Length: 462
Image 1: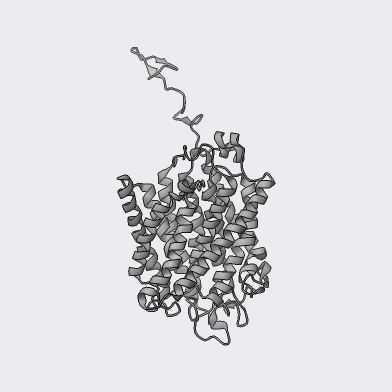
Image 2 (image 1 turned 90 degrees about the horizontal axis):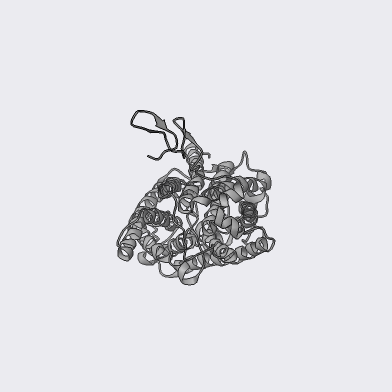
């Protein structure tokens, strides 16, 4: 039976998740140097264009068609979105499943295309997350080629592993190995999105090498208000990301919404506390980064833990990620905007802590973690899922990155990096500091200065 309320919630959630990509562009864009902000915005924006087309052509079929190779990849039945319109999805449609065996969906089915569009937005933002690790030094079309290859070889298969459940796409449809064989829990993408992107960001930072002058010259964020605006848009859109993953406008969505809020708030406090202890002052950049760290960590856990558990996860994630961003200096990899420290580490924290904080009182399909009498077994499953995704993404991304680099299509020249990647790659600059006309006078020319007798001397200094 089709539930109009659930359908409306999933479509609205898809729109919220879509907003996260422009939000991420502003979050990252504010942190880069003034001469590369447009390149960063474009690296994020192009993901909407590329991944949306690929998702229709074969991405959804690769991710969610019935399994073809032992839980590793879909069989492309739905390539071109064939057999999607006019069809329903959900375990309620399976002849042998009358009650949900996993955290989602609700008791009613969904229009398949609503689910298609919701999952598309996850596929869009995941490669966009990677861009922060390689800011200030990437050719635009080299990045575009990387996005095509990476989502095809890495993201779409991993999405199948994590998000494709047996029976969801039809009574005889089989899904991925993490969801169905390992039975690790990931409510909204801690493994498929954040660990996946974080590991890829580390690999690309290694492939591309350090920016000119790093770490002596780390570059200052050019627009902190942009960063805070981006973080706020991400927080807003994340309600679709997490609560939308319930695929039903019911109690589980309310739990995920609540946990997303309080974990993020707790992570801000955790991050700022570390800053206060280390540097003596809390920063706006730290508050924004702490919020994102909390959002990342609660993503896999939001449908499995209590609000008190989510506060614990948030505080831990905020503090650990604040400490983890210094790893790049210790190990010498130039992760420009701390994708590794926030997304890889935050994703690992949230995924593993499910093994401690999961409670069957929240979600009977999730079971109990160690702190609720569930033993160590779920923690072991969470660790296998997390490190399997991390290892696969890291190795595959290294290979893709080195191939593009060998072809000469990845890193800009030193001259372009120093002079400004925006001008070199896009023939634009974000801000026009000269030549504009305000009130009839050039913004850069000195205004006429009145003399004692009321005459004006053009070009004199005030």
